[in-house]
Amino acid sequence: MYYADSLLDRFRHVDTLSSRGVGGERENAVRILREMETKYPNIRAQAYPRTGGQDAPHLDAYTAADGNFGGASAKPAPPPGWDWRSAAQDALGWAGRMAAEMAAGKEVDIAIERLVEVQSKNLSSGKFQICVKFPSEEMSYRLSRMNEVQRTSFVDKVSAMFREELLYSITPTEETE
Image 1 (tube, rainbow, N blue to C red):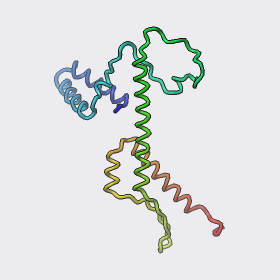
Image 2 (cartoon, rainbow, N blue to C red):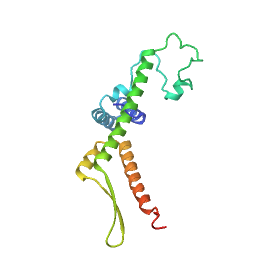
Image 3 (spheres, rainbow, N blue to C red):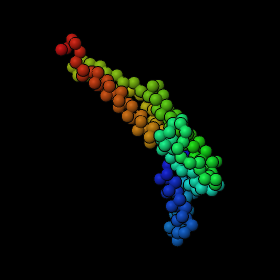
Image 4 (cartoon, one colour):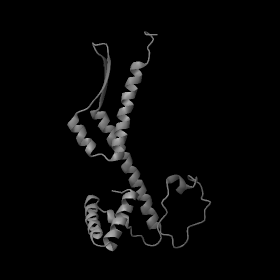
């Protein structure tokens, strides 16, 4: 699991306070540090990565390719001390994070497909009703296992389903024109 840079920065800050703090500040920092290490396994290794030499640059795919997708590179070869292993680890870590994000998005799609139902109908009172139905226990279980990005994506997709049903219901048909 990979943690956000803001969480890693907070961990480093609390770790610094646990070693340099005084009195209650230090005690609280040690307690928070223990809690973070329990809640986020392997956070220390990510906060303080061990690399053999210089760190590989953290680049997105477009910047790393420098607009050169498959052609000969116009850039000179890296210096002799370049740490290829670290660069490969960073690239594989990036690919793993992207794969995890894709899997997380797929999990949201599966939850919506299996659990969410949007229905509309004309009521006998002359009103029109649109409802979103889902089993509350199973939905609360699935939502509790999702991270913040997944929950936001879930809400956005269900909202889009509702919006689509509403637009369909208020669009005039040939019969009403």
